[in-house]
Length: 212
Image (cartoon, rainbow, N blue to C red; front, side, top):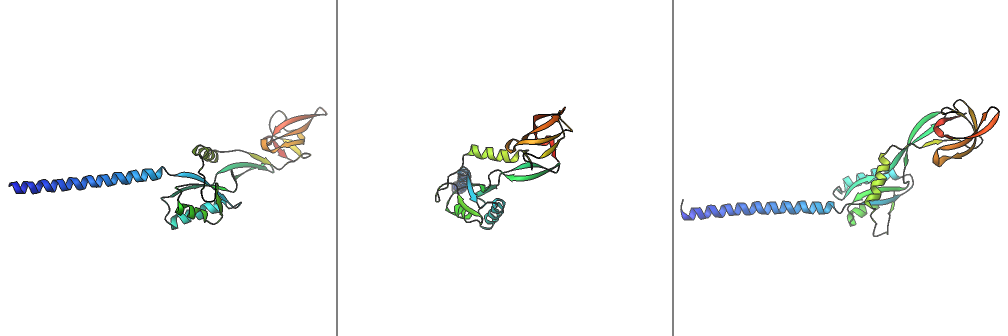
């Protein structure tokens, strides 16, 4: 190999190494840019028309796909819990909104993403000022999402003071009782039970009774 050929081979190797280094640098820069962008993700709370929460979620998901905004708007959540109702002695389950009129959106906030969300049918505004939405605290969002994924049993019963009920469990099972007071927030009530001809007030849980 002549000195000139060796010089050309060295130059070629240097060019290849330089191209590899440039490619690695570009890949690293791209990765760092994506990571930086990812770190800009925040949760925002969007106010909607009452009863439109799920429609807003569906409409926004369609707009994200249609407008190619998947790299800026990531998740839309409508926090819900399962509520158990007792009707005519039968247990029925239904989904209940934890925060009626609100939807949670995880996104990178800029003019484009703001426009896509704000102009989705059913959305009235972001929580915060009109031009500068305020991101929610991550700890608060985690609590809300945990509540929506946890099984919540809240028994609702259509009863009021003066109604008669049959006790189906506990020490007074098979006794009839007259309701005195109802505590819907605790799913409990107070009722009079006739024991040996004497009215005795007792506290009962909704799940212990059937309405007559």
